[in-house]
Length: 218
Image (tube, rainbow, N blue to C red):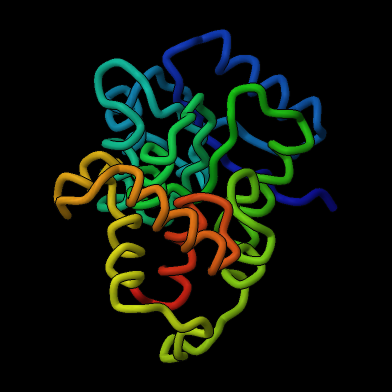
């Protein structure tokens, strides 16, 4: 007996890219049903309530004219929290990735995605609730998959200043803005980031955010 299809929506302002993703989904032999196509967030929001079946997963670009991906994800979280979002975009800065994470995006792939990565991302989001293996360490990902005691103590001792900096790295502030806020140099901010990444076995600000989330610091 055939499994029920995965209901998916696709939002991107480039028609060829949308069609390409649909072709890719069928090429990797996934049992999917595309229930909605839209060219930006406004188009998506206007069409979604009219659907007889809601998507389980929304594949979306971040940078679109009209309502962009960030605003659309925020709207989804408020109105349709069960719809999980996979971003396929050309986001290349840590600040944008942080913004995606804070918005509630469940996974991210670049637009040069390989077919197997797309299949893995969809399955991971639907089964585990997230897919961030493109830009976090395997150790952090493993930690997030565990239902650990939320009251656990931090396994690594951080100074008060390190905790302060860690929380700042969990914001959308750039290193320059952090430096101005703290009246220190950008080089000093970079130094704190490098030291925290080394101490917490993270490879980027995303890793620092996930460490803080895992240990209920944010």
